[in-house]
Length: 278
Image (cartoon, rainbow, N blue to C red; front, side, top):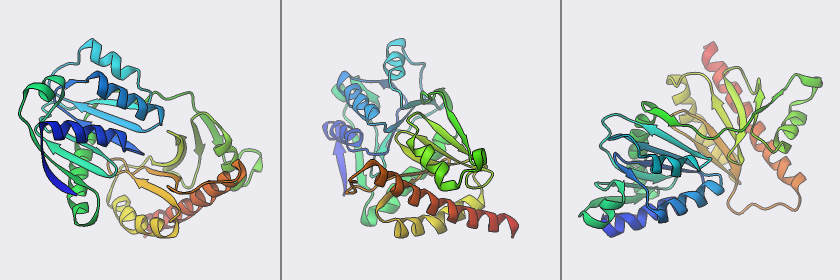
């Protein structure tokens, strides 16, 4: 889908971007004034543990706006000086528009925008928007980070436990956790927002970009009953249940996640280790 939209259409599709997100919402707007209706949608996304990133850039936030966003646990607020772009996207849909996320703009202004979904021939267009947005995120100042609970760290060398045993303990732990020394130095396995995430401590470089290019298609092919989301601006990998996957017991769900994590870890270990050696 690709289409030109006007003011009412832009408001409608911004709501859809938020409501239909399953992993991530990114909102870029120079001026920020969130309506009650939009806040309710963000609150529902927050309750579903969807990652929300909001970037503004023209003026300091009013205290009332800051209080709204402070209540969202899974919301990160960034500031980018000189920001003039307006873009709203989730993992499957993007909007590039003239309209700020500002109540006045929705009511008084005549706005235009383009909406496109990440499908078919539009995928390259979506990816270009995503790349530019991620570049802005990478160069923005953090004003409010995700509300991180106290982390519990699990060390693979503890009690001589096998990787599978430690993975099981990791997955059974309810609070945010970090599994140390897994799978290789420079990569951590953490659990937050309800799913496992591989985080790269190393700075993004040519090796990581080539790693994503080579391994992402392999993961999607070999792990076709999972959903894998590889973020561009920091290269984190999120792994979570497939859309139509269900389990007869919690035990089977844990086994399912162990298989996915071990497959990703094994391939990351081999690829990155060989890349640094060569």
